[in-house]
Image (cartoon, rainbow, N blue to C red; front, top):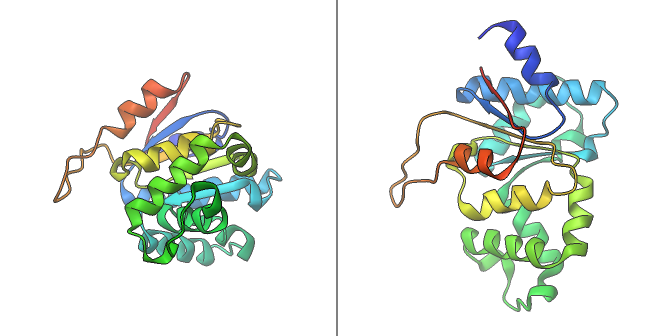
Length: 195
């Protein structure tokens, strides 16, 4: 990877973008891209960084802290489960959910969040307008509901940048869909940069 390619990736902020990178280069890219956006005057509240797990979100937050990332941006780094739980807790009445959200399985909470955003245009617009720039790390390990949440939140601006490795991912229970292929088919004029 050349410095020129890295800079090109950091500056590709408008429209859909795929960054294919190792986990370490992907994290380095995310930190640099957010620094660039903040330097351009974008408010931290307009940036949303989604990760596949709480552990990955904490690792990314620690990387941002090392670079002097402020508390406002740290609050915008979320794993899908935490974001979904917040949405479902706040709007459970719209789904008719009567059980304690904290007792639900993570996949069910994420599915409920997808349903909320997918069926309530006012809610989707409210949260989507706040997420002018969406970045998703570990993109190649996300499930269909997580992919849908990215799409639903990104509908207003379409400034979605996904970061992941090029190799297929197999979990104990399933083979993940080719997220990059799905992303390319879903959006037009996708920039793709390999780091």
